[in-house]
Length: 147
Image (cartoon, rainbow, N blue to C red; front, side):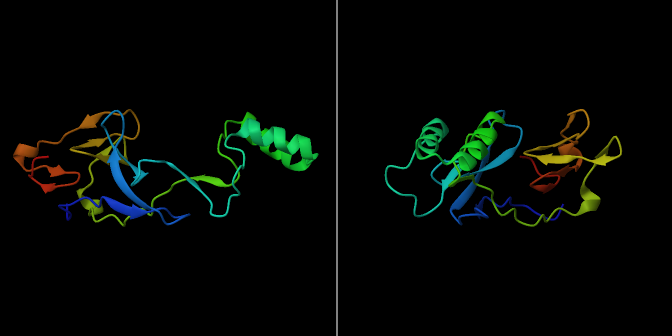
């Protein structure tokens, strides 16, 4: 392992807002959130009074008779896309990995996924903490170091 420090700052690929790496709810991995804690960004120039949810937008489009846009928004909404056309889910620019590929253990013929303090099998989810006391590779801290 060649890295001793995990990158914790980045920016959104779409809007450029600063983002930070945070723990997932189950504490098995990291995820990215904007520094204000949000996961959704809004485009600039959205007029005041614009709909704040999809049902409001559908009602507005129906009132205006814009059936093409109505159909498009409705189809996305029915398929589970709750974001408005001017919103996006923040996506961090992932920093390049500094983990040497030779240091990544394999399970079921696939490289394991790095998680805080462990390696996780991509096939069955087995958690491998490696024998850190015996000099095993820590996913973020390096050889033989404790998390």
